[in-house]
Image (cartoon, rainbow, N blue to C red; front, side, top):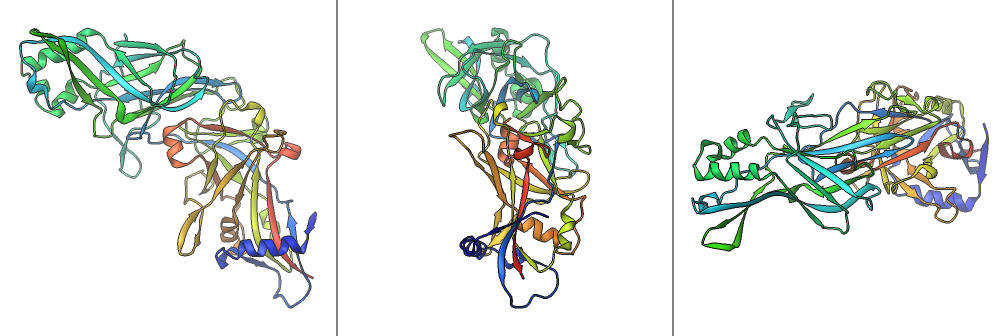
Length: 442
């Protein structure tokens, strides 16, 4: 096993660094140690295996972001985002009377400044009226959500369409709907109809809408503030033709807004990525793996040879660093600044988020991006996973069915389609590595 010695200068630096950590982060190997010469050694020969895992569904309802658009990456395939929503009843409709004249009806929404792909190209969206009411669904824990895989039927023909170029942060776009939609609502109000008597009745009448990109808009996914989505009913009174009144219907408060994320990986290395229980090894995918928010795709990390650590003697594990390298050549978006770890088992279930205690407070372990902006050759993510490795070795045996899941943050997982592609274990100098630092007694 190849070992590299590090100077005593680094020895004291590392001791200072780990001095802030919990004592449980140290793992003693071998026989009882006696006072002797010591040195710091780094071992990087334990193998690291990477795989790609797709989750059957992730909850996207009630999130802060409405995602709309489509873009394609030649390596990972295409992803399309459709946003679904309905509206609560406006409480000022009693001001409408027989003298009120319909002008127009629109849906407005404000851009967050988030996009993936090429937002400089023309964006083309269509609005469809839903034919079924949006209803929350139960997950395995009896919590109610709508998921990235949820789908509700809509009318064949769109009721609105817009073409636009995204320009600035906080830009609001307004999509005009067919006049018949607004005239129908206005007439129901004038007739004091049952459909507009209560909010529940209104939701039963107006099931909601979905906004989708057209086939001509395949270059970007854009983010909009979910709470900025408003149905605007514009009217005027006969005697006051110049004074237009807007009756806004805000997005519903019952958390039925959600983003549907449709992935198409056919024709790529990842077309066989189908179910959560069967990870796709990087060696079966062009020596690559990837993660992506919205689609529920994460990277699984395994350490199949870690049990060999018990053959080492007279060593104390001080620190465990994980290095993984994204493929810069395939980057068409900014890499996530930080990635997070979750424990997992042989069927790829999300376990506890990896953490450690510092000053009686829980700190979550994350991988931070270090970009080589000068040469673009050594961009990598670096993470201190000492707490995970130490806990896994505590029973003097490492269960190789256990591993780590690497993901964007929970917020990004639900509200973005951010992604990164990584080199696998056969990528020579770019392969992932587990660097274990030991205090060695001679």
